[in-house]
Image (cartoon, rainbow over all chains, first blue to last red; front, side, top):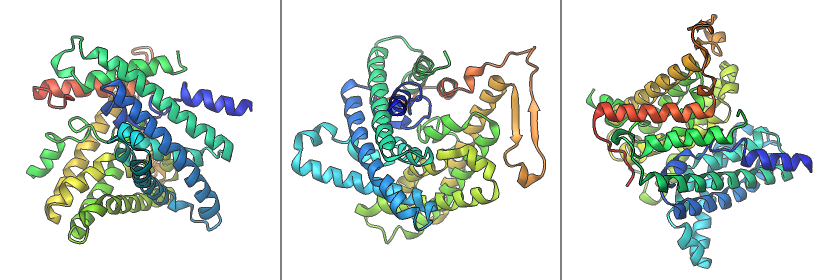
Length: 188
Length: 212
């Protein structure tokens, strides 16, 4: 139990996937201009990460390991993620229109989000058990949502402050992220 | 030639298009990792662009993305197996960032926007330009981060089993310049890249990557 709590806390705070492992930087910088889009992105990532972690974990341990084809994991995992995203989009569009409208354009973008493939691969390389894997994927995607939401609030303020012209936009966003990383990391 | 230069300066994948930031930030803690990562991405990019361009007639619009992702992930898996067998040390260092080349938006982006529209020759040149541009930026960031963050410069260390010798320098003595350790930590990565893009913008004049 202590182990699970430990995984939960470190995945959200000290080893946050965005700020220390640099996974999901593209949506972190790209969709954090407003708080609403940041939240939608975070929720979509949580949904896809949790589902794809379960599927890939089961496939890896029940299909790839017995047949000794572990080297195929990258191809298999990206296929699972891509088809899962497609499937989710179709299902949500049909049965949960309101959720689909909220997640909108962010769902298709998730296929090429490094956070998803990254977490799925980390589950395997860290040798997690099934429960640990579940806790890790939920908490690290929670960490993603937390950081992207906090970051979007900072950027909304940043819009109205004076920034030298050549540093406007992405450069200042990256520098802000650096300060955030210092606050989150355990080296201070 | 013009296409290649275009990839290095006008459409630099990191500084202008802001693609592939995951590996850019994660792998640039030392110089060696940076150029090897750049090399891997360039190889994947060149082959994926060539293959995409060759098969573009048979791929319809709705299956474009899955087909290209499949091609890219196959190429990445080949590189993974090669590195694991010939330079296991570098395979260990790269960790999950090697398979993550699959979702590196540069490769898919080039396949979709360039290779699926032009002939083999142009898409090869485009891939080469983008690859070189990416590698150069990685090397600049790594150079800065390693020299000032660790006071060292690693050119051949993990790959020493291929070359048979190591090439590592100590740039400054710790008494002259104390290493700014936070530069090799994650925070330093964000800071270095942010400042680099800012400087690039001010040299180029104007800021065309401002988000709207």
